[in-house]
Length: 254
Image (cartoon, rainbow, N blue to C red):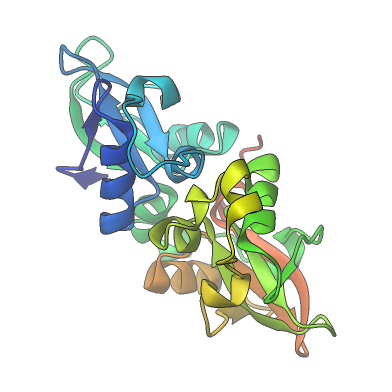
């Protein structure tokens, strides 16, 4: 687990949570109640729903309940929790009876402390998702934002008119530039239209479908990516994300 994590109280304003997530490049934060006990998490996905620069809305309205993970839990059980709830992080508490925050665990934490010899000998092509959802550099950020909210994607590959992959746009790319604050009324009024090419991450970090799980984990650890494009002969053929890897490594299913 990662120790001494940042967190928010359920009575804090959501704008504070958004600021912490954006400034620290986090995917989520533990939430504590007035007694200092863990009640759940807020995620970058929740922050994309905030359309105002100032808000009196508190974190309590955005909390996602999570399983209680303790310092003594087996890694496979934690991996199952991460996968079944598709959680970006899980708070770690002292014990089931003492839900005091002592750390957080994420897929990246799990990957970083695995014995390489215990990683199954599989290729990425065996586990990648081939149901692709993409966007173009000229697409409006609001269109991509809506697609992420509706589908719960963490990011979309950006392709050209011939389908050649150019880069990736993620929830964090949108959040850090304030693109998610373009609400319905502002979309109608705004003349300053933001397009994907202004926010997308380049160059594209990709992997070959013949690459091993170990190689994919290495790429994720190096860049702390949540998902990687799978490219074969210059063509986008799939996507592999951290939850795909967890399922393949630990043999647990959603």
